[in-house]
Amino acid sequence: RFVQDDSLKRLARILKKGGELRFATDIATRCDAGPGQSGLAEAAAPGPGGPVECRLLYGGRVSYSTATPIDMAHSLRRRMGATFPQLAGHRIDYAWGGFVDISMSRAPDFGRLPVAPRAGHAPNVYYVQGFSGHGLALTGLAGRVVAEAMAGDTSRFDTFARLRHRPFPGGRWLRTPALVLGMGWYRLKDALA
Image (cartoon, rainbow, N blue to C red):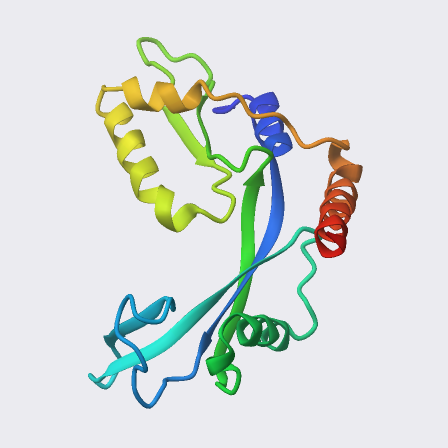
């Protein structure tokens, strides 16, 4: 075998799958405020037909149970209306979700997989996992660090790889229920505060 089985099992214990939820509003007839004037993360980019589209990309909800909410767009629309009341009437054109790998520390896990020995070859199977929903910001850096390591400069990669990641408690069968219960407890505490 190329990769030792126990390594893959260790990697699986470090991660928990979570569902991230996002949506995009309809195209506004005009951009109500310029950058920095409204606090909105405004997307102003040419659309398929050429003119600028002004949409709000909104989201960030996480489902630790991996269950998709029944009406995701409605749930996120309510939150958007509470955050930005001026957008409460906007239609939702797109709603989507997907799984992300979450680490206990919420920091990415860098490493090398031990491989079956081959004469004269160093371990060259690299992995980076567990971006915990921060992949858009961090994957470019991670890709550069892995590319540097593959080209022979492992200094930055080794710095990240030294960060130790604890496995989620509960083992294979209780990991998800324990996480859902723990996150529910803290959500309740926040609501009552």
